[in-house]
Length: 115
Ligand SMILES: [Zn+2]
Image (spheres, rainbow, N blue to C red):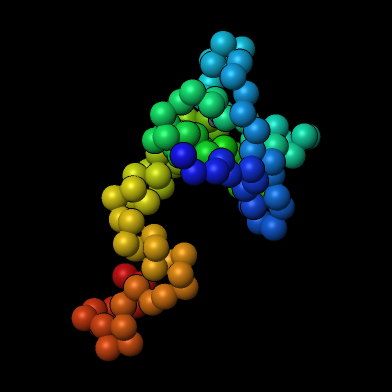
């Protein structure tokens, strides 16, 4: 079993990632962004896929808060699920992005920019 991740950096701020086994019972949620405490709580017994989706969900809450986007819960849920699906469906593209490598070469097949 690989080591757990203990922090998430969002816009230069490190948030602690903590396990909270009571989340589902207490809040009917798999995760919670606790802005005042600078932490994101996750339900430790959720599936890996659910934890990944929840981590992105909470990160979108942080972005909404920090960038003053005012996203409502439904928008956060749909946006996070969509971003998570794109990441899951495109591991090669995600690895290239994280490695700072080009997606297409300078002599790429498309003549359009940011189409
Ligand atoms: Zn939420």
